[in-house]
Image 1 (tube, rainbow, N blue to C red):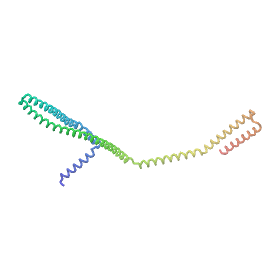
Image 2: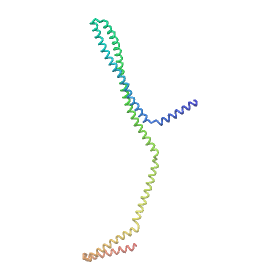
Image 3: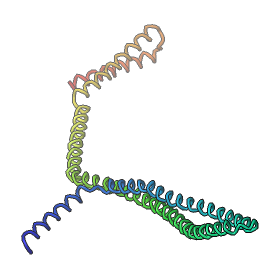
Length: 249
């Protein structure tokens, strides 16, 4: 293979690859639909011209038929009047009119056939255009879906699930350690000596308040002898609890 042929092949390959990359199927299909729709007015104009020719020939045929009938009447009238010369002239015109009528009939038949064929071709084109348009719309939808799927695939490629999973595991471990440390601190805080002393002090305060209440009841005569003994027992028990508090201190 010669050098020039190789260069040409490389150029064509590069150009084809660039065009394939630049070519957007969606835009190409939309342009194709527009081109097909733009041809419909041209087809309508062509069909209209064929139909106009048919109607013109029909009008000529009608005029020639009228002329033949008129010439035939004139020939008969001339013969009755004994004017053979005039009748002969009319006969010549009649023969020419009949020849023209026959030729016009043939042309009119051909024009009618052409009109039917043109209308059929136009209708077939419109039907095919609608079918192609529907197919193009489906392809455009498929192209859009493919584009979205490609974008999603690219996004998924850049999204490393493994790294994020390790991050979640690491954060979960840190949070678990913090929760465990907080629970341990709370447990140590509730079981400390200071908290126990606060509980004992609250209990001693309750005993003192009960003793004070008994003193009020005794001074008001609301307690009998048994009540006094009970009060003494409660006071002595209160003192014992106070001694126990001192012992603990």
